[in-house]
Image 1 (cartoon, rainbow over the protein chains, first blue to last red):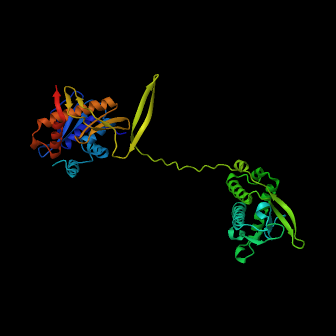
Image 2: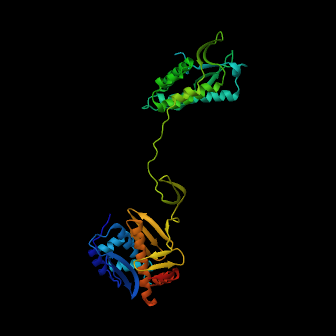
Image 3: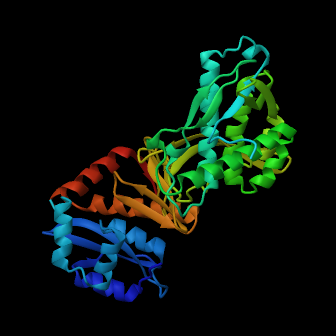
Length: 95
Length: 310
């Protein structure tokens, strides 16, 4: 079972081009991904100190349009922003 | 050795079958085939396994008839091509010895003794099956293995072939269950289950199952309740409902919305919040701020939602 540290994940996703959403909640933050001024996707990330559990990883993976392994690479670093854009472009999600 | 297949063993067939000093072709063929099978079986199971065994050495031939009744004589083939290997003679003698022991048992009529001759079920099963077939191939006709004095044509009974009853055969046959390949095939299916509750007990009965990727469980809300808003839909929003590992998933692939949770309620609540976010967020964005995919989702959501109650 994989778990992610919420703070590290938040910071890493920010480095990959994600930005804070205008919507806010007590227990979570929302990150959005924009490309060429267009809203592409958003994902919800835990705001508490609890690790991001398996079911939240599943949700974030789907929201980021990645399979679980690629999402873990995106969240932990190996998958670069350029690689990520390439994946989204191949899926026709940047048009 | 009372019976010697090397020189030939006479089988005296009396009664209805042999009363004309003749044998119907089909009976003779059946008797000969069953005898041949029995001899082959003995050769396969009773000879040393570390020596080459040529089954051709155990071919039986019909070598003669004598007067008195139908008395065919069966012997190992005398043809040179059926005498191969160094030990063909010893092997034939070994098989003959076992054959004679089986005839002794038949003569006693106590087929249960076969278990002493063949304690191993694997060998016994096949010997019993072939012996049963052979001794019953004569029908109800009295049958003897006999010796015939060729000078006087006098027939001297050696072994009487007694009927081998099915019940006796069943007792001797041991069921051998093959090891079933334990490799499991995993297939997922969804189904319709009828649940009945009576006297505090719940019974579930599967009515139908559907397998394949085209079938799935669904979650189809007509009203979506988020934190501060209630969405009334024109028709149910059909979403996938799945349990994966230790959590639940509700996902609308059409709208790109997913909710997950450790319980069904948590997953539903998560889905509702995601729907609420998507609806409100897309509403705030102009067409030139949306990808084609998100514009499509916005259009669909606007079509689905009848009204929103704050």
